[in-house]
Length: 191
Image 1: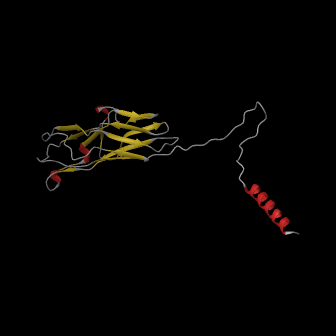
Image 2: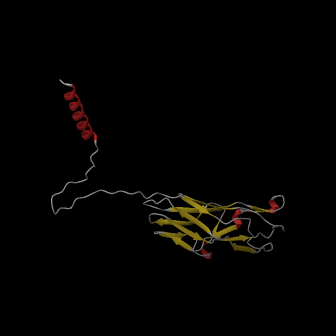
Image 3: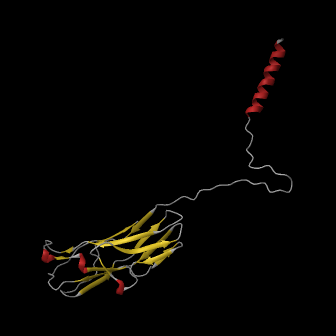
């Protein structure tokens, strides 16, 4: 075989190899004339920061009153934000309280959580779809915070959502309470 023929054969093989390894675009469908030809298209909806609850900064004062009276006040906006973007976007916010103490926190300087009541009131704002349910719609349905209670919930809906409410805390000051500024914690959580 001559040198020229070998070079021509090598060139032909190189061209054939290049054509064989060139990527051919993928076709989703091949259709006849006048028929619909389909291409599948995808995109992603990403979830946000998840499920979280935001409460007012403290300390905050709800007022004052003497032994045997009632002291009450609103805490400010509590907000649940649900950015999980799930098919069933339901949640339950809960609330509890510690005992409130003054001075050295002795028995005489303590107002037990059994004297602390809470009511959420209706939502002041919501976003998204679903059913938002106040834990306690009004003062008549207030609950004692001697155990964990439901503050607010979302019982139906999907996708991202949020709810805000402005709860009221009520303290029944015992007749034997001593004077002082009492401090305790109202705890909210969501799951």
